[in-house]
Structures are given as structure tokens and as C-alpha cells.
Amino acid sequence: MTPTLVGDKIGLHPVAVIFSVLAGGQLFGFLGILLALPIASIIMVLLRHVHDIYRDSEFYGKE
Image (cartoon, rainbow, N blue to C red; front, side):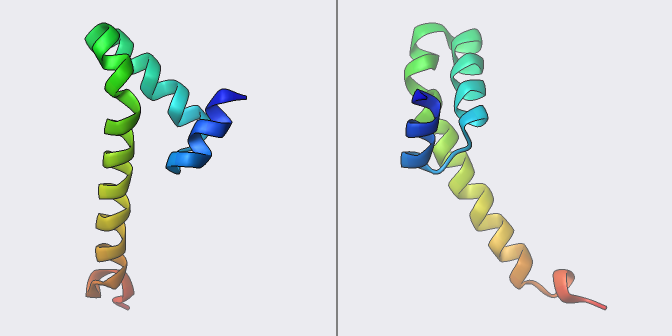
């Protein structure tokens, strides 16, 4: 239930929340667990921004 609630607050899928916390803990220990969700949120915002730029480009609508 917690990944669903946290994921709704920050805009991540519950599986992405679990994966990012596990990966952060495996790679960087306790500090990785603390920083996993903020870093995952930043990455998702950047990916959404890049996706919007791509959809507005002429490559997307080129026929």
C-alpha cells in the first residue's frame, strides 16, 4: 500500500517506487535508500520534458 500512496504523491508507478528504493539501497546503501525517490522523480521529470520536446519536433510528425 505504501508504494501506491508514495507513487501517487510524486507521480511514479508503484513498481518504479519499489525498484528505485531497492536499486538505491543496493548501489549506495542507506544513503541510496534516502535519495532514491527524489532522484527517480527528477529523472522522470527530465524524461517527460524530453518526450514533450520530441513530440513537438518535426521528427515526430514527419510523414
